[in-house]
Image: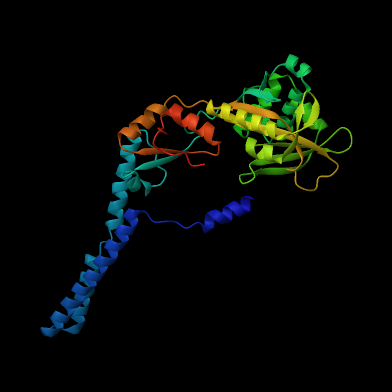
Length: 349
């Protein structure tokens, strides 16, 4: 993967900015004009009876003197001054050539997570068997086997890790939030992982919108743990866990879970579906005949300084567009919270 990324970076085309294109055109025109003038001077001198050698030498000197070698340097100095002025306004520019295009910005496309929001994911609740919101506690874990199963899937289908002495962890904030939820319920994460070693992983795919792992069970066989976007996981499920029992997932169940997903999404919560199945082999697709366990609701609040910044952009005539992989309902809720007006714009899904 690292080699492939390096290869793509090396092969990437370096596009010119409008300023660079205009400077190139100006340079070519000046060279053409200079050569024409030099040729005219040489021809005029020869016609006037001057020595050929002297006139050729004069023409070359004229061409060299007239070609604007300092033009790129002047442009670079001007752009560097622009970077300095922007730095005083707390705007950091990585590419020198970006200064020119930033001066005529009409639309800003921004990521949501970590840019508009704090990127501090917190699991606020697990929803089992419809709208049953379960707290993360030892007592709830003892009373509800479905809750334990959901937290176990969150541990197994996970590549993050928690810090031992400090709050938080290393890895995707969403996966860290799942581990912290299990920790609140006092599940020994390290012991559980050692008892269920991973034998295969299907990495998250943006097209599939799911991730899966195969883990060895204490008894024979493997547990396939799946997490992903609610709509994708629901489509891969044929059954659902209800009070410790596997029951068929009927059409009415689909509608109830889908409505719950939309309801919580409108509250600005990021939704994650958890599912599992047991199998005797590590072959084949993990996204078939799954059993739905429930949804995890995750909160990632907007940054306090975002709304005033977006307001200033709008007052300057700049349109702010939010780009996110979250579902439409969640995206619209966050957009409204940070001041991105949706009244006259359609959210593209």
